[in-house]
Length: 155
Length: 111
Image (tube, rainbow over all chains, first blue to last red; front, side, top):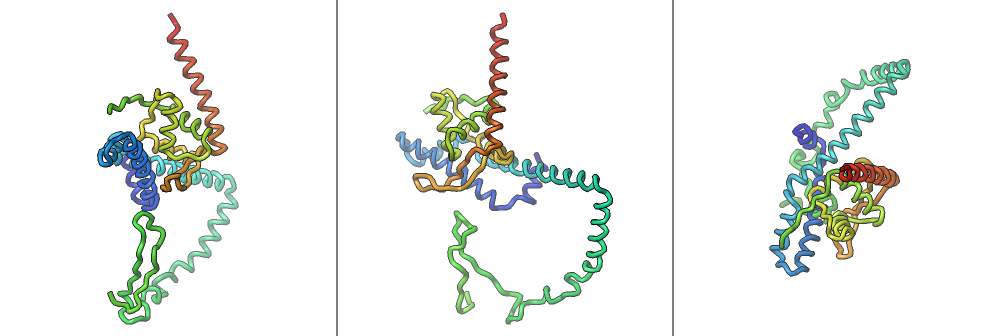
């Protein structure tokens, strides 16, 4: 299981983690509602809903492992498929590899070092200290509430 | 209130969930648990924590599709629906279950 965890930490976006948290939180809220409707005080109902669900953290992990394991399977399947396809047509594969190699070899050295402009600070006073401020909804962080607006540029 | 555990046999959860989705076009996880419990006349209770790993695996297998939507209570929930592949899988799972119960029956009846 450990390698799953490691791969997950590397590849899994925070977005899917948040979505899973939301999905499970919804489940607990609905269960608590039901218990409350049956006469349980709200606090107890929430507590009970959690107990009934089992170990929330480990279930969350297991669900995420399902996502990642299946994703990894798909990647490996695609990889094997491509490798087989390339091996079946060696002449084509070699041509592609040589073409890509001959085209990308001259480009490689011309990346960042020969274009220092991409590393220079922006042409503003204290350009290396520019900030971008956001405001977003904690429940749905991908949706900005308001665009950054600091007319005086001071905080 | 005592919670009577009647955990669903490993492997049958997929069958029950697929069947539930076949009779409910769009349904969230919580409603899947209540549906199975209600329809089984309280004989079956889905172990809630194990439902989501199963649902997510089925989604990755392409048996179910999931999308966010709003419930009648205006809450955001993830709704599941059956895909064509899931429908085929349901048939396979039903057949597997029939064979399993038939086999168990035979062993029980053997005197």
